Each structure stands twice: as C-alpha cells, then as structure tokens.
Length: 166
Ligand SMILES: [Zn+2]
Image (cartoon, rainbow, N blue to C red):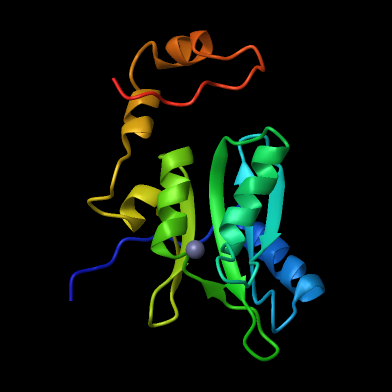
C-alpha cells in the first residue's frame, strides 16, 4: 500500500491535544458536548471549543475557530479534535467541513488527524484535503490588492459591505 502522508506529532502538537482533552474532561455532556477541539494561532494562544449538539449544532472546531475570531486572533496554525471513548480521549480526525474551514482561514495550517489504524499524525491542511474546493473569496483574498479593495469597501459601520455580484 502506498505510504500515507503525515508526520509524528511535535511537542506543541501534543500540548494542543492535551488542551482539547482538558476542555472535554471539564465540559463533557453525553447529550450535548461529546467532542472538543483546540486551535493554536500564530500568537501561540490556544482556543478551545466544544461541539454543540442540536439540529444544526456546529462541530467543536467551528466553536474553537469562532473563539479565536472573537478574540481577533485568526492566524490559525494548528487544529485538533478529541472525543470521549470510555475513560480515554482519542484524537478524532476533523470532518471535511472543518478541514475546509481551516483551509479557508489558513491554507498553511496543520491538522492533527487519525488514520483508521489508530496512527495519529500531523498533516498540512492541504494534504488532508487533496483536490480541495477553493472558494472565490479565498482566491480573492490571496490576489494582490485584495485587502486594499476590501478596506475601501467598508461601510460606515466599519463592517465590510456584503459581497455584490459583478
Ligand atoms: Zn467538523
């Protein structure tokens, strides 16, 4: 079988896993919160989140990324999720939607994932999503002058104006 991508976890990766486990240990509720995620940003800060189980409940990764965004700290570097299985808290591979969200925010970030054989690895988010969807917004963000144009388009409220069709 061809070798699968992935490198061993670093000390920082293991620390991120521990933070996710701590969050789940304190917030676990079988009917609502069964998964925790942690993201580390370029500032070195770690943000955690629990999944919210409901009709459209978000994954824990969305909540953790939202916590980082709430703090204005969205230069995401790494992401991990853990679940509870009995007395242990194994790493859970982020779902495709969460990998896509990470890719949209930070195409150079890494994701900690688990292969079906139990091997836990660090992957670039791009390795984790081969042939990934790239939104037009993400493409526009990386085009020269995109930030300047976005700033000019801000409304008096300070919020960027909604994207208008051209
Ligand atoms: Zn997800």
